Amino acid sequence: MIREIVAVGIGGALGSMSRYLVSYVWLAEQSLLGFPAGTFTVNAAGSLLMGFLLEMLGAGTASWLLSVGFCGGFTTFSTFSSDVVRMLKSGDYTAAGLCIALNFAACVCCILLGAALGRLLKR
Image (cartoon, rainbow, N blue to C red; front, top):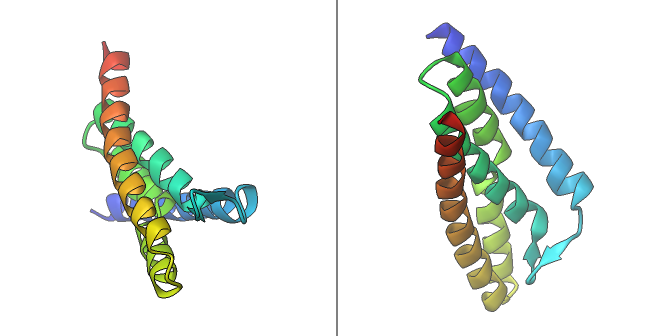
Protein backbone atom coordinates (compact mmCIF):
# COMPACT_ATOMS: atom_id res chain seq x y z
CA MET A 1 0.00 0.00 0.00
CA ILE A 2 2.83 2.43 0.80
CA ARG A 3 4.39 1.77 -2.62
CA GLU A 4 1.12 2.71 -4.35
CA ILE A 5 0.71 5.88 -2.26
CA VAL A 6 4.25 7.01 -3.08
CA ALA A 7 3.73 6.16 -6.77
CA VAL A 8 0.50 8.21 -6.90
CA GLY A 9 2.23 11.11 -5.13
CA ILE A 10 5.21 11.15 -7.49
CA GLY A 11 2.99 10.73 -10.55
CA GLY A 12 0.64 13.45 -9.31
CA ALA A 13 3.50 15.89 -8.78
CA LEU A 14 4.88 15.22 -12.27
CA GLY A 15 1.39 15.51 -13.78
CA SER A 16 0.71 18.80 -12.01
CA MET A 17 4.01 20.27 -13.16
CA SER A 18 3.28 19.14 -16.71
CA ARG A 19 -0.19 20.70 -16.53
CA TYR A 20 1.35 23.99 -15.44
CA LEU A 21 3.80 23.92 -18.35
CA VAL A 22 1.09 23.19 -20.93
CA SER A 23 -1.64 25.47 -19.55
CA TYR A 24 0.28 28.42 -18.19
CA VAL A 25 3.48 28.45 -20.25
CA TRP A 26 2.89 26.80 -23.62
CA LEU A 27 -0.78 27.77 -24.11
CA ALA A 28 -0.96 30.78 -21.80
CA GLU A 29 -3.67 33.24 -22.87
CA GLN A 30 -4.74 31.00 -25.78
CA SER A 31 -8.45 30.73 -26.39
CA LEU A 32 -10.53 28.01 -28.05
CA LEU A 33 -14.08 29.07 -28.94
CA GLY A 34 -13.94 31.63 -26.12
CA PHE A 35 -12.64 29.36 -23.36
CA PRO A 36 -9.11 28.49 -22.14
CA ALA A 37 -7.32 26.25 -24.64
CA GLY A 38 -4.80 25.02 -22.06
CA THR A 39 -7.44 23.46 -19.82
CA PHE A 40 -9.11 21.76 -22.76
CA THR A 41 -5.78 20.51 -24.13
CA VAL A 42 -4.65 18.89 -20.89
CA ASN A 43 -8.09 17.36 -20.28
CA ALA A 44 -8.23 15.82 -23.77
CA ALA A 45 -4.57 14.72 -23.81
CA GLY A 46 -4.82 13.33 -20.28
CA SER A 47 -7.96 11.40 -21.19
CA LEU A 48 -6.27 9.95 -24.27
CA LEU A 49 -3.26 8.93 -22.19
CA MET A 50 -5.47 7.52 -19.42
CA GLY A 51 -7.39 5.31 -21.85
CA PHE A 52 -4.13 4.10 -23.39
CA LEU A 53 -2.52 3.37 -20.03
CA LEU A 54 -5.56 1.52 -18.70
CA GLU A 55 -5.29 -0.87 -21.63
CA MET A 56 -1.50 -1.18 -21.63
CA LEU A 57 -0.73 -1.52 -17.93
CA GLY A 58 -1.96 -4.15 -15.56
CA ALA A 59 -2.74 -3.46 -11.94
CA GLY A 60 0.57 -2.53 -10.40
CA THR A 61 2.81 0.27 -9.29
CA ALA A 62 3.32 1.60 -12.84
CA SER A 63 -0.44 1.89 -13.26
CA TRP A 64 -0.79 3.82 -10.01
CA LEU A 65 2.12 6.10 -10.91
CA LEU A 66 1.01 6.87 -14.47
CA SER A 67 -2.78 6.59 -14.61
CA VAL A 68 -3.97 7.63 -11.16
CA GLY A 69 -0.96 9.80 -10.30
CA PHE A 70 0.27 11.44 -13.49
CA CYS A 71 -3.04 11.62 -15.38
CA GLY A 72 -4.90 12.62 -12.21
CA GLY A 73 -2.44 15.46 -11.62
CA PHE A 74 -2.28 16.41 -15.29
CA THR A 75 -5.99 16.71 -16.04
CA THR A 76 -7.76 19.68 -14.61
CA PHE A 77 -11.34 19.10 -13.59
CA SER A 78 -11.15 21.69 -10.82
CA THR A 79 -9.57 24.21 -13.20
CA PHE A 80 -12.17 23.35 -15.82
CA SER A 81 -14.93 23.90 -13.27
CA SER A 82 -13.53 27.26 -12.17
CA ASP A 83 -13.19 28.33 -15.82
CA VAL A 84 -16.87 27.53 -16.38
CA VAL A 85 -17.95 29.39 -13.22
CA ARG A 86 -15.87 32.41 -14.27
CA MET A 87 -17.54 32.41 -17.72
CA LEU A 88 -21.01 32.06 -16.18
CA LYS A 89 -20.36 34.92 -13.73
CA SER A 90 -19.25 37.15 -16.60
CA GLY A 91 -22.40 36.28 -18.56
CA ASP A 92 -20.56 34.37 -21.28
CA TYR A 93 -23.11 31.56 -21.34
CA THR A 94 -22.37 30.40 -24.90
CA ALA A 95 -18.66 29.92 -24.22
CA ALA A 96 -19.45 28.18 -20.91
CA GLY A 97 -21.85 25.79 -22.64
CA LEU A 98 -19.39 25.08 -25.43
CA CYS A 99 -16.63 24.52 -22.90
CA ILE A 100 -18.73 21.99 -20.97
CA ALA A 101 -19.95 20.15 -24.07
CA LEU A 102 -16.59 20.05 -25.85
CA ASN A 103 -14.60 18.98 -22.78
CA PHE A 104 -17.09 16.23 -21.98
CA ALA A 105 -17.38 14.89 -25.52
CA ALA A 106 -13.68 15.15 -26.32
CA CYS A 107 -12.53 13.55 -23.08
CA VAL A 108 -14.92 10.60 -23.31
CA CYS A 109 -13.89 10.09 -26.96
CA CYS A 110 -10.21 10.38 -26.03
CA ILE A 111 -10.54 7.73 -23.31
CA LEU A 112 -12.14 5.40 -25.88
CA LEU A 113 -9.51 6.24 -28.51
CA GLY A 114 -6.64 5.75 -26.06
CA ALA A 115 -8.07 2.38 -24.98
CA ALA A 116 -8.43 1.32 -28.62
CA LEU A 117 -4.82 2.32 -29.32
CA GLY A 118 -3.68 0.40 -26.27
CA ARG A 119 -5.56 -2.73 -27.37
CA LEU A 120 -4.12 -2.40 -30.87
CA LEU A 121 -0.54 -2.14 -29.60
CA LYS A 122 -0.99 -5.04 -27.18
CA ARG A 123 -1.60 -7.46 -30.07
